[in-house]
Image 1 (tube, rainbow, N blue to C red):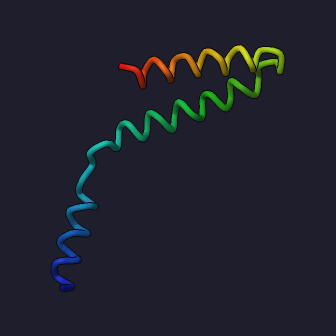
Image 2 (cartoon, rainbow, N blue to C red; image 1 turned 45 degrees about the horizontal axis):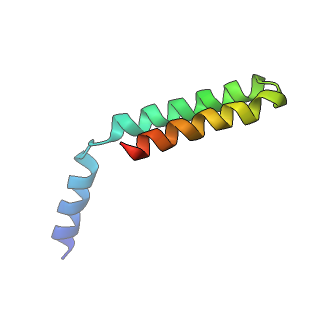
Image 3 (cartoon, rainbow, N blue to C red; image 1 turned 90 degrees about the vertical axis):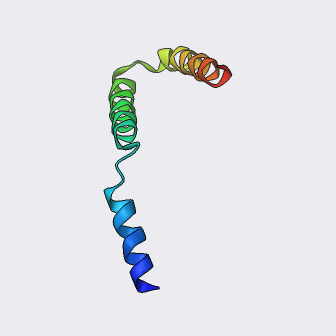
Length: 61
């Protein structure tokens, strides 16, 4: 049992699939937070609408 657990743990540790996607998502989120901090509050609903439309387009395809 312990041997199987070690093999499974080693396999998960070595698996790097999707790591790049997560890193890019974190960078995009950090940039979005910084940009949102500099935008005037009057523009935030417009930006939110743009991101909502983009998100719905990605989910539709």
